[in-house]
Length: 251
Ligand code: FES
Image (cartoon, rainbow, N blue to C red; front, side, top):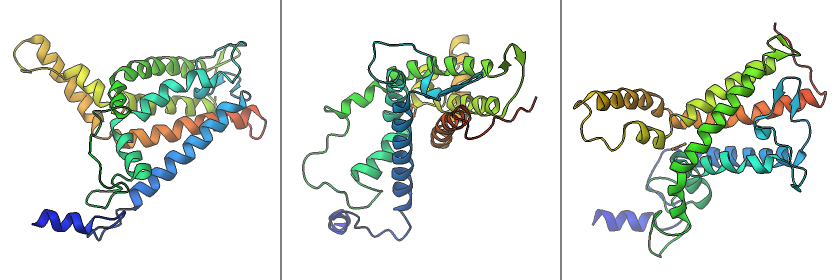
């Protein structure tokens, strides 16, 4: 009886008995993801000002020379992190709510009514299950960006630290926290275990799983911070490379 009543109340888009500001989260998520998408697309189309001195934008890393490719090399690189983020368990929730509104929040009326709910068991959403494979590509990118961050200390063969160096280091740290707090990684290091104390290997796995679980608890936070830092790193290098601002040398 209670169920049929709440179904009637939540029958129309946005209808709910909730009295909290449930709409703020999907609104901010939609704005944040939309702004990042617009900026990243714009930056990828530029094909210039993505490097300066020892700095290289993460949108254009690894450095690819592809004269045969009609667009900027960023379009050869960005699909990998994009697919990793687009299939992330957290981002799925965020954009299902913000854009598909199915539903926009718990106990809130959805945009679509009727039909059969198939979740992620049918095409195209079944492809979300490829996330675990995109994780491997994302992990390779962390290695590449770590290498870039180390190179950012090399100013014409001399050790140095600029504001750009610090930004690139911070970026790879937050991207690493996001990537290695992934639920797929947590499953890789500690999943499929029936017993965590039966032998040495299972104890080791339990230790690794426990550590990943610590950063996994804040996966949403790392998702947003790293989205900001990766965009900001590109913007900073772009502004320095185009002469709008000067890179401040700290050392
Ligand atoms: S679950 Fe978010 S990156 Fe894997």
